[in-house]
Length: 339
Image (cartoon, rainbow, N blue to C red):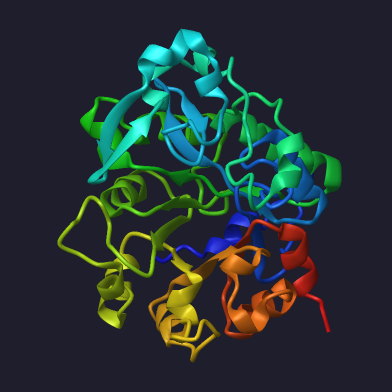
């Protein structure tokens, strides 16, 4: 049976009564990352204060097998690791999903070592105001779950969590598979059921298939406009987005999480083009649709919507998406009721 992703947010932790969430859901992309450094307590708490329904942590892993919240396992752009002379000799080059990357990697540090670092703004040129918030420790997945649960108790709203498992094939190959500690975290936190306030994402296929066999928690197959899943190089996301591809996804996942241009392509002039049939096709396959990512800066918005993030998000609401990821969750929340 296809599990319905919206059911993930229909239980209030402080009450036995059911509560239907607003629609579409607003997922705070790495927290309110347009206004605070991503994946920090400040970003998550601001997103919750702004009305986000769900907060999103990206998950990588430490040398001692702890789930760490960072956008990537290479952390020179999101921490001050380069300022720590004691870690200078750990700078190295790794090939991850076919891409050679040089820097410092979470899998070379214990959790205790990682928590001596401080988070920093990943896009300081675009978001200079965020550089003032640079003295936070690196969070674990458990810490983000705890933030959501504390906020649920405080606000009376169910705050969900949408973890993304990053590079599971790569981590398995180096002896640090993500799935076992992640499943253990779900069990420990009673997040295994279909109506748990969680939605689990991944760009890879086999990770989701593994999770589907062991948990009823809602699963989201992520897809981008180009490329394909790292664990199935013979496939493309374009093929997976066809009716046939969507039918296969529906055998192991409950939703697709897709780049906005897969729903509303850009014209050669940089304006919003004609919508595709992806939302309709996905719904026909029994899948929910999550669109990513809505950011306010001009570089991320079509020419005809620059300065109008509200209008850009509302365009997708009108197309029937079930949820959106936004770096500015307050804008996405307001857009649900904007005239």
